[in-house]
Length: 252
Image (tube, rainbow, N blue to C red; front, side, top):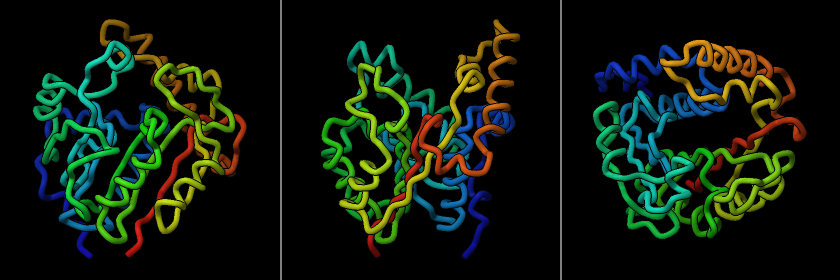
């Protein structure tokens, strides 16, 4: 199968800059990017991705694929404060920065109008914990995937991370997430990811050109946290890790 699909996109300066910054971004970003890139290359030159809850969609930036973003319209104060949902301003900003966006859909993934068997990949990063009707959400993801299509998702690790977020409906323990995924897909695999601690907290600070030392300290925190999070055995470590990463596959 061809792996030349990257040639079909003319990357923007924003995408090039983001790629250069990847070593300094949070480990979760690197986990998701690596997996998505490998999946897209395996599919080939016509790979289609549905990015659910994409917001500004950093995880699919510059991927060699045709990307559709579906997200709720930004309407509430909680959405504004937590940077959730999309509006026309966000849509226009993303279109200017991105070379691979095919479409934006304002909608709810639990009751979408997207045709069945439409996408090779569906990705939902830190989304499912916000969804009240999680069973319907996963059923819809399965429906819109092509046969043998794959669903990549992350969510907070409920075996370790206490739910204090006002917009999170639940935090899944690994066995709980595996159960609900196996009920909706042919098979699923889950691992723990991203070591917690002071360097993770440091890395989550917002970057600002007006605060260079603050930004450099955040980048340093991400570098150290990435090293911590790449150590052998992290994927099986329930305590001390902050995320679950799951891959589920639709029946062929």
